Amino acid sequence: PVSTCQSPPRRVTAKSTPNTLAPQEMLDLISFSRAEQHKLIVGKLKARMLSRINTLPVEKQLALLNKCFRYISIPELRDLPLMLFSLLPKIPSSYLVTLAQSPDLFAQLPLPVKRQVWSLDANAPLFA
Image 1: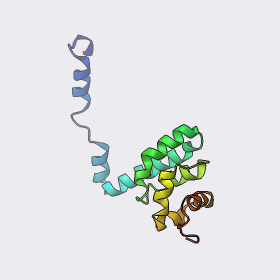
Image 2: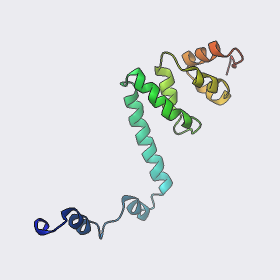
Image 3: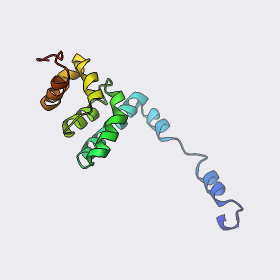
Image 4: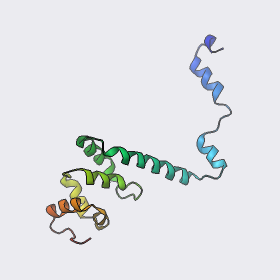
């Protein structure tokens, strides 16, 4: 019994793991590829984050923007910083400069964010 074992956690671990497969390995067995698994996980996490962003205070929204802005070039993750841009009343100029330099990103920005880019950079495309 576990009560007489000198190290119960080791005993429990050793007893519960010998014949178990990792969830990814089980999904592999039913031909659910790793790419599909990762895409599904990223989609669920992104949806959860997007649903919670609205309730964050502005300071935390800025902190989150600071962490996720580097991934804005990845289409699957682009929605997070774009949502943060639309929620923030004033976007730091360092982000606006970067957005002005990328026509693809600029085209996807909400109009209030484009206005902030235009006010900072007169050379930003007017109709993108």
